[in-house]
Length: 625
Image 1: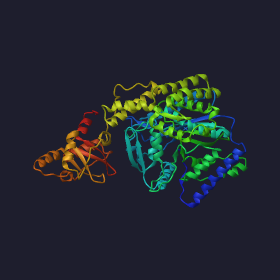
Image 2: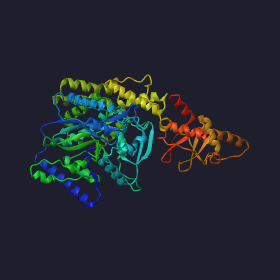
Image 3: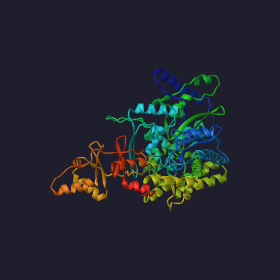
Image 4: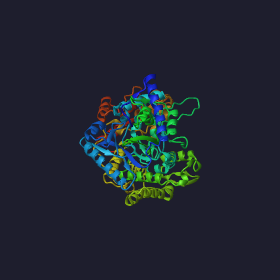
């Protein structure tokens, strides 16, 4: 998430000061490009690994800061949520066995994190979205207490003017309001960096955009969110909507999202990309900056362009242009942000080799993509592959081709050529690109999760199925199998801790009736679905009553007498409810005390589930249905 020592812009003086630094940074970068001060004789790679921290019961942990302090290694840093951490890998020259070196360092650092986490009864998991995240882990209690995160959250909400809304539709559908940016914390990625020569930046950047869809298509690993089966790479839609500052109105107006693929091919230079971002996106956070970049240049000092870097860090392009200084030399690079974390380290490094190889092997006919491909095709391809994964049919250079065929027939040969050109070790090229070939022809991370989650749901409640799936993912990662080698589940993984909160065992598939419905409709629904309790809602969708089987029998007697009643006439009006965070033990006590057979579950006055005597009995027996 970038620089942490930041603040909201609270007054016009702060804003004016930061904007001056931002504009001077743009001018300084233009001068450095004109004076050929940007490094152009070396190609480096770098990466950032985000990962999840989970408890022994396979749920999100919330001790990231404690573990980070215990690790005590500058390679590690916090992330937005308390159940995530990030590793910043050392940059390496793109040559020889660099990918083996990246893999080796990543394994060493993740092992260090795992050993430390184990001391706190916590495990490390690589996955795009942790399946066991619930609405509970999206509360402020789970936000890392960093000035950057709080400032970002407050400013984005201020700009939007209302709470955020998610609406995702896949096999299932998720529509929910939320009051913070913490939904973004669900996303964990493997971010890859490639340094590029300034004169080739625009061609490289546009090429990175064009190849995003097929690379994403075979790398998807995030199909589940809050127990819903959504997109193959749900991160793409979730990230965009969780940080969306745009507001709806009756007027038809174009507004650019802060999380964006872009609207057109880039032109001129990296400076023009930055200028467009300043034009299109409000400045939301600032920091105290002492040195002026133009003054530093005059004095022969290479500036860090801190204001520009900070603003760029609040605009979430899937391919982000970056400026940096290393060893006293300035450089520019492209950051690939769309690849999810996992399923394994080997899969991630193979993705890295594929992307770098395709980038470096770009055929000259694609130097000017504006004459080869409509940008809207590239953008449409990206959204389609996020939805459908490797089954997508793409529009590619005027033709239609499947993701699998494009990877196998065109892009893998380009990757081989690009890696050979950079003199990457032959064994690494063969090993890593073979992983890509096998995955393209076999199973992706999202496909494995979907298939096995569906199998688990045949015999398990949602919460238990998600925990069992997470445990299986963890075990496969420990075995260091690449994703096509992961076996399908044939037995249910044992999960240590029994569910202990109402939200873990409640039924979320609810049949409800309106208080003004004819009572016979309600009784018919109960008979047809063989259910003994039906929540009653008013015209605003709020819980206002409850029907039980007793009311069904009473209604049947009344109907024999020719008395036609509505639901409001026979429902229980004083309804006792619990929340998802209520313990099951407490819910049992409430049922016994009031001699009732069910408890509607509400959250922020909304009905989200129901827990019944049947659920409690199954919980006591340690069963899962």
